[in-house]
Image (cartoon, rainbow, N blue to C red; front, side, top):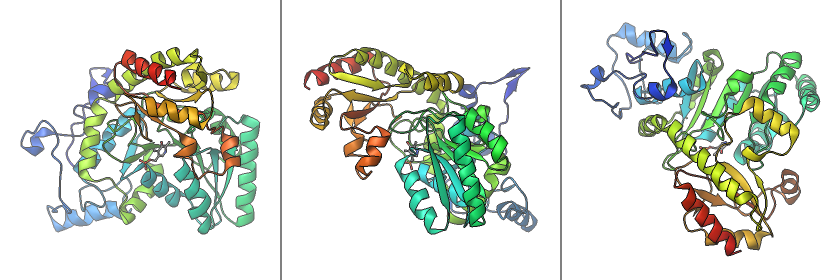
Length: 423
Ligand SMILES: *Cc1c(COP(=O)(O)O)cnc(C)c1O
């Protein structure tokens, strides 16, 4: 491991993440005084001595927990990735973090490291489609089963799902290996009651860790570790990367939770590359600025859209009507985010006319970038989902998904106004 700039306090003041992003984990003196970390393009690292090489390998092979004492080989890690992991952990108030070549690389490495034949995963639904598919199809081939419950479920329904999962695991000779949540869920924005899941876990499955995909509100607007979750999952492609120019993933949590995942990542090489790690270091310097601006923009745009005659309704966390969902939002979230659902009056034809008329917002899937994006889940991201499941999830033909960026809010409102006029 590189020698690090570890200053996290001044006197008795703990420095905030947005300050720590400018230096934590990097010592310019080790790189010719370069203010910014270089991109370390190397496949392997030289050992100062044979004994040191042995010690470093003890970390890689798990003989010593918490990763290697020194760098060994770029499939295991490098300076850019280590600095990034230190800084990602800061945002989440986590002990440690791991970065991956995509959000799905993070998710699949976590799931494969957590489960074996006979085991059961209990998960909230819906999940990101690729996550749901990996659990239902790829893990099923390894003899791993799942039980799911709807994102808005109350304590009784969560208890029932955990009890079913535990019974199934017992019957299969396995364990209730993992509780996997996603909140808010895509594209419904339904929130999971993390505190209720943590209470249910404590009562029924105290050994089972809780992981949560925090891509939509993290790392700024939701801190699930405070509410009883153990592992946070990110597509860093979205708000953390924030410029729609990279694909990456992350996990954060306690070191003992992440160590088995690190070991599997070492074996299969799902770590992100040094260049992407460097891009993310730059992104994390502005993540608070970008998310704050995008969130403020979304609030203004939604205030305009709310009463527009061509808008049937909005699925925006800043305007929750359901009392139970509003209660979860108050307990868990510090902001409403900038990704929401717009239900156009009409069906697919009206939605397509609206999308095709947009002049500033780009027609693309994904979210969390500097630019505003719009898409049609039923015809795009969820095209292959069976109609009955779509209906159950509320994915209708008039649903347009919008991710608001950091443009001028009034320009965005002008764009939505003229596009709705074209419907
Ligand atoms: C995009 C996304 C993923 C997958 O991330 P990739 O970086 O595309 O692999 C997982 N979960 C959620 C909630 C996402 O939005």
